[in-house]
Image (cartoon, rainbow, N blue to C red; front, top):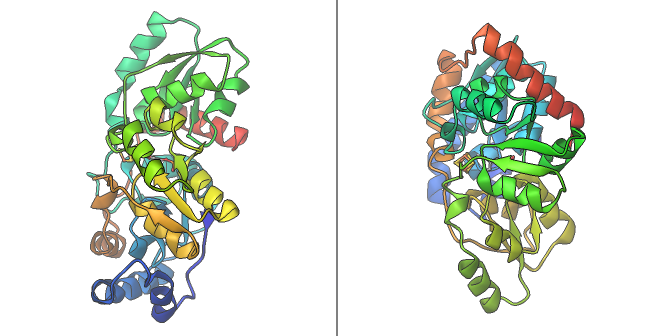
Length: 329
Ligand code: 13P
Ligand code: SF4
């Protein structure tokens, strides 16, 4: 997890921090909105939770906590703020609402979806449960609340193997990421029944691309997200959740590193690791990039784009997320 509290950072402090990844001309556009948002969030007792893929002006400029999806769920459950602004995608905001139903949870752009979350519906899960009676369902948090409501326990890429093994069974239905399912299968004896969902960002990476980068940079450390295809993970030195990747770089301080994941994250991590050189093939998540400072300011000022989940779905979905949080990382 990457925790930070920027409430007291001045604009100068923030720019000093991110100047290595942001030209001054761009900073001048962002600075006035960063200032306004940081004032507004104090006035409204709001907390800004940002995923690691958010742009540096969000991650370093206004976020109170920047983290992976597991830590965002945990932080959402702990906050005493009145309003949670979730800078990430829709399933993350829904998860925050499930974890802390009394709070107002706002998502700056309701179109910030996820190819994995839209690959499966609650009806699909009911159909699978009929096909495999008695087999427990483990769903990646990258799913809708409707899918979580049909799920026994959620997981993220940070704890998928641990969650599967916690069930003490010999077979699970694992949804919806086919590649994450494949990664889990390689790390457990439990039989994994998977779905065909993929992440449109991570599926684009190829083993050839990774191998070519290694040939050109023999000393490089290559770390991949488990949403990548299996041959990409095999060609890498380490696989882990976004915060697992952040931790790896922080602790190992490799001379050169390639983060095989959404490329904005390299900018965010570079700021905190100035002695590490980042090689950046750029695959962007179009959904994550829908979140901008302008939209964050508008939704917080007007308290619009509030996440609502029907009572029945929320009651069932909450159990599967809480069970995951109890299992931990
Ligand atoms: P993490 O849980 O590793 O942050 O991943 C979320 C995600 O959407 C990756 O594409
Ligand atoms: Fe979904 Fe992939 Fe974007 Fe993550 S990077 S939010 S898994 S589409």
